[in-house]
Image (tube, rainbow, N blue to C red; front, side):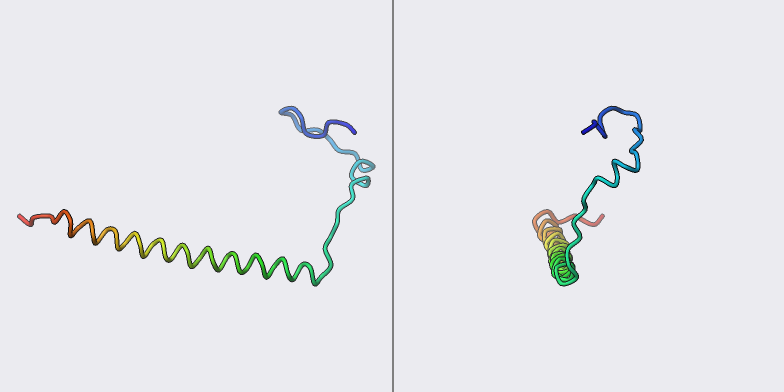
Length: 72
């Protein structure tokens, strides 16, 4: 097979080369399982992000208690 991606320039890909590629598409039920998994992961990421923000605010409050600023 030809080198399709080496070098900095754009290389043309012929129609016959594209037709030779085989792309597997999962069945609908498998696509639904993948989408559900990704949605669940996205939800976990959102919850962890919220948790991180809460912990950052807690740290900020504790640091202010540890090093109080005097008001002039």
